[in-house]
Length: 376
Ligand SMILES: CC(C)(COP(=O)(O)OP(=O)(O)OC[C@H]1O[C@@H](n2cnc3c(N)ncnc32)[C@H](O)[C@@H]1OP(=O)(O)O)[C@@H](O)C(=O)NCCC(=O)NCCS
Image 1: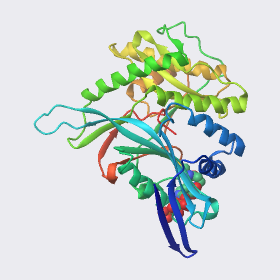
Image 2: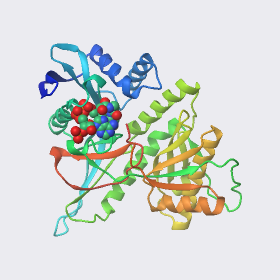
Image 3: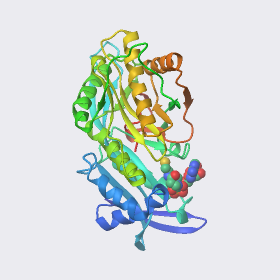
Image 4: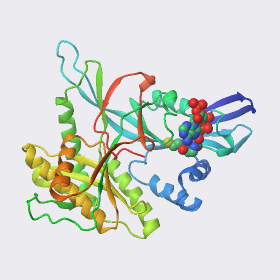
């Protein structure tokens, strides 16, 4: 797929070509541009090495990870803008139609757009805008995307391009200098999640999300409930990425991928970022079939496991995106009973999730859960 693009502005005419980077050399040129904006902690060679390693991950294989770019028409080796699209499995449910028709939960194709960058010499000429327009056309056509998501670090730049910002909240648990004793009052038993546990837990998580979607009460008839499924490929992608980054900076990476409380059918996948000294909760699978107080204690124990893991590796905080009422209840318990400091805030600047429905259609979308795991 190639598409010629012409931009006329005060700096003159600029002729470029939009294409998908499939040839190895084109990908290297794209990665060299991306490294200027997103590879600051790696050498240019290190960035290329990481991208080659990530391309081998299950989520990226078979067209799961596509690279798009604009090159100058008269100098095709000069890449002036690029971005990537990554496959996501969407779960979608429309509000019940008037007349009480049966609720249908569907699994559909979605994408995450990431690494959007324009060469600094060519910024402010509309290149990122035209590239995103061309990518959106691909998403709506051959990509067969019901929706796409991206995480903005550049304010509302993407809003005028058709992506709507979603609310994004974050809670932070500060790792205390000395860990509290947990003998009194008692908490349920938990154990660490290893890489081998991920597939079976993800399968259970996906199944229970589908059941939850059936029961969810949508606020309006024309509203849509959507989320990205926490599949094994999705969870292991970020685990592989962070393990690579940890090994580059610290020569090691923690083995535990999270913690599970089997008796409550609840677990946390986490993301130990040694470079930034924080542990991020990737996904929180909430307890089922228990009374509220027992559920809160199970979640509190899991969060405490995250705090203890962070302390073990010298990290200073545990972050969690968009915790719901159950997790807030658990954090209040940790704060009141064990003195763990919890801060809640609205994220305004970094990683703001933005969502675009097929064809730019404006829908009233409830995006839940909206956690860290689909971030790229
Ligand atoms: C953001 C970026 C891709 C824009 O590329 P570009 O080709 O200059 O974009 P365009 O010329 O199409 O559009 C320029 C617009 O981007 C806005 N913009 C650029 N950088 C911005 C920033 N850091 N914060 C907010 N807005 C920004 C400009 O204000 C302008 O807004 P307008 O469309 O309302 O006039 C480019 O600045 C870049 O590569 N930045 C570094 C990498 C980055 O931060 N990428 C985004 C990650 S989410």
